[in-house]
Length: 143
Ligand code: CMP
Image (cartoon, rainbow, N blue to C red; front, side):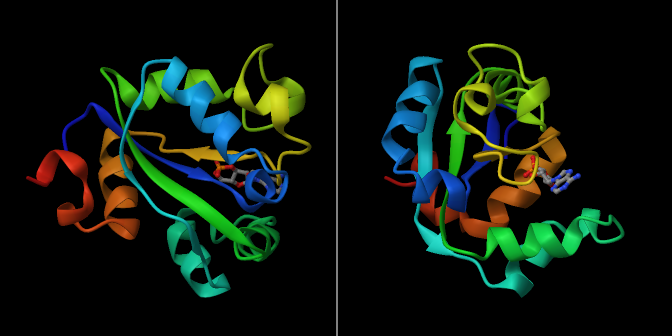
């Protein structure tokens, strides 16, 4: 995948709060193009695989439980400098530390329930996108 893409997940708190449309609008107004999207529910094992890099962290169990607690909406987003610009748009992992106007500052309650995930590198964006979407389901690869 090219470096102009990132993988985002609207987390179960975002879905439960009825904020899917509002957060996607926020993302699109910032210039990101949605090139793949689905709604799904992770199992604890699937969530654990996605977040395997955090498996030694004390919050890993809580994270897997939360991410499998309801539906989520993974998306592939396209924009120049997508990974860095998306992380800027969503703000710090802990919403208490997120800058004004960021998605997490606006909508998130806590570091665990922080509305949205964004890839942290181009390499991980590609790995994470493939976790949810075969290449045939990414718009640029259709047609
Ligand atoms: P995310 O960007 O999805 O990547 C890893 C997630 O782990 C992070 O967002 C947080 O939601 C979660 N996380 C990080 N630190 C903590 C913590 N101290 N307690 C609970 N969850 C955390």
